[in-house]
Length: 207
Image (cartoon, rainbow, N blue to C red):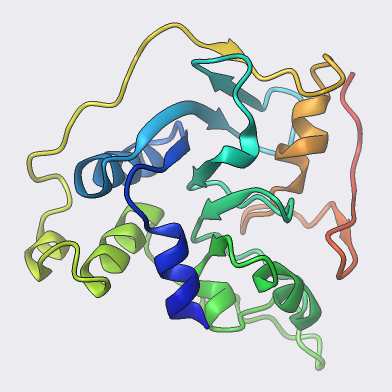
């Protein structure tokens, strides 16, 4: 199952929205070099009102991109991520159902709380998304093992042109959070969001 999901995501000529941190940018460069991906925009996220998605084309549909380094719960949006995101095992089942997301912690069934109220965080994937992207490229035979020794070797620059904030269907700033960013869960959170196994997440709206 995971092999087919991996191949479904790591295809040539995809469009992507890249996390603006150093790890996300490096992962984006790897995907541009090895799979000829096109950067459609950038994203910053902390689960607060300052989160943003910037697009080169204001009419771009987020479902046409793979988010890189951003854990997006929306079932119709693709992503590659390494954050420790699964609150329970039922969530993992829902996460994989659409076949458009890949995360080493979800693959390994890592969850925040087990039946005995313990957490798997100590055994979660310890490297960043760029390293994980490199491992996936090597596994698929798209790059040699040498890539794992030097992730920064001969990589292209990512585009740096004029962008516009994503406003969502409602035309409001808080549409970003409803569509994407308030579905973000990462290991640094205090777990302020509530879940069910159908991707329903309760959150504060920023207006």
